[in-house]
Length: 222
Image (cartoon, rainbow, N blue to C red; front, top):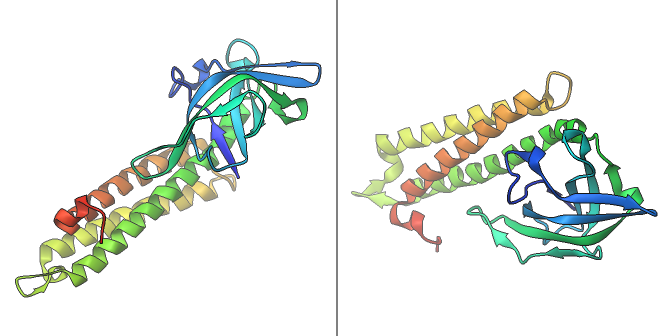
């Protein structure tokens, strides 16, 4: 597999402020810098790294780094609340074959254009998490009994399940539309809208699912 590394401690949303510096000389690219929030870096064999070859936006390019590249240190995995692992990357004159340089500058627009598909991938991931939360909550509402009957018999619980279903389906349809795109592939506007919609729907659905479980929702399910 391959991970994507963009974010730096001082260059998150302001990606054009990234400072990881790559220099090509004598058939070898040497990379120096520090990256954070690289998803699945502890699992994948290759990492697509956004880096700088020269000042300004026009100087931004990208290289593919093998996980065993000399000069690359991958931190132990950290974990998001979802359980997904991420690592810090430290490049100390990391050696990369020149053929692994995708863009030696002047690649920012092309790289970000392809990033629209990554946004859709992120949307698909959180929709999958939310779908599982919804299904578990629905099953629990059938199993759990209060006042002599399953809690799914109560109108309030039915309303919550309907809200969860509606939020999921609305976000899913927007994601499908983004993946297809007006030009046959994901576009920047549609993929951005889908990512916002899917993450907000996932947070909403998972929160309601936790409430459906009551106290069990704040603990590991037995």
